[in-house]
Length: 248
Image (cartoon, rainbow, N blue to C red; front, top):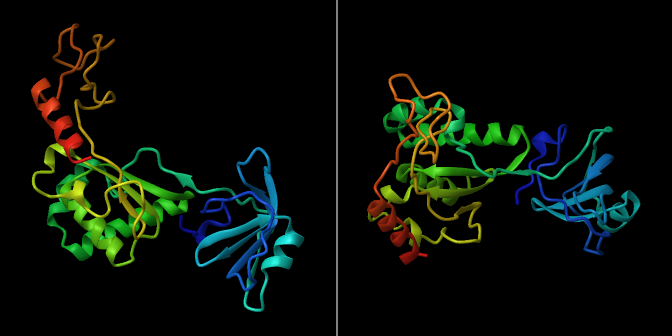
């Protein structure tokens, strides 16, 4: 997990490991103190200080214990000034790049952008997520071009957050994403491909999701029995699932 200090005023972008401060060598990069530190650990719900080295939290505990064990001559002391430090948020489902613009506009402009412009859009999405305390972002339906962009960003060290992708399985073709070194449970360069996305229908807010019962108020022009519709046939869905399992 990555530590981002830009949002320390509103929360801690990182994962707190609530435990007594271990006797690591001193000279940590930064030591945070001076405000409520929420660990989200029932056994140790609060702490007085957090020590960070090389972008990772290495000690959480009482202020005195952490400072004694971890502070070195080059350690930067960060006083929270009474502001609360919390663990970073993990995006359960989102579309980080699309979050910077309307989805329909994203799909329209993305093919017209060169890689430098696409990378700038990705960085803007990361900044937006980080601003609200996220340390892990998700692309819940990554198009092939998006996957290529994320991989390029990871290789170039330009991922500020951890990112997990779910490419659209119907669009994979011969791309080889499911056999990529980034596919699996482990993050590499801040990136992993966590699985694939299979889109069976559209959206409930657009009243195009495929429901088991008719919509209470059907869209204009649709009969009272309208319950949405599938995006693909049963055979297509079964084929797509089979493809995913064969490449698991």
